[in-house]
Image 1 (cartoon, rainbow, N blue to C red):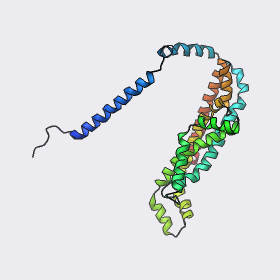
Image 2 (cartoon, one colour; image 1 turned 90 degrees about the vertical axis):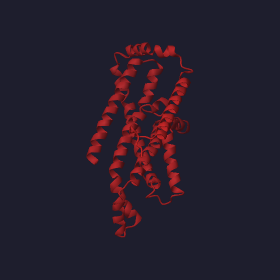
Image 3 (cartoon, helix red, strand yellow; image 1 turned 180 degrees about the horizontal axis):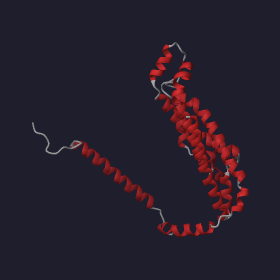
Image 4 (cartoon, rainbow, N blue to C red; image 1 turned 45 degrees about the horizontal axis):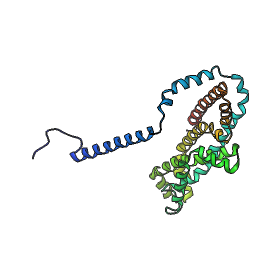
Length: 266
């Protein structure tokens, strides 16, 4: 019996298959690059550093006196993120249990419906939700809150139902062996195992929503984004600099609060 003189991790067929996949990937990248550059005006791209330097010079120094006019809008942004997250989490909670294989009451009707809701929520950006809701409900905070909630449902529900499906079945069987009903099994065997994931996911989503809610005002959904749009419309770049600094500070504080709450609860 003859052995190969040189050891190889993959067979010749596997190596050829991998080479073909990489070749197709490179071809796809080249094609996408050509499509992207087809309508690109490279003069504007090369001139971008000069434009950035020009706008940066107009932003300096920031007009710190403008802070007094944005506190209310900044508070609205925090409220949009917080209330939207709370509403989204409340809706996502039952949807996650309906979507998980080991907790859904019906594999053929309820589970596909729950999975469809999760996919629909995750596939549409919060800006698109806000555009639709502003057209339906009119401009204001309500449209922003619902837009954040609709976007949060899919994110929270997907991570939660995956955690439900990964629970330790031994604990579930142990509680079931005592004669417990289905609700008691969920309460004493499933829920304690997924609670840390639920808390962490909810706080993480709130942290993300703080960022997303800052731009909802650009489409009329209220918050600090409305002030940003007003300042950019009149080319008040020192005010734009103040708004950007306020948004950055808000995001940093929200990350600190999220980390502290997660550490305290988990």
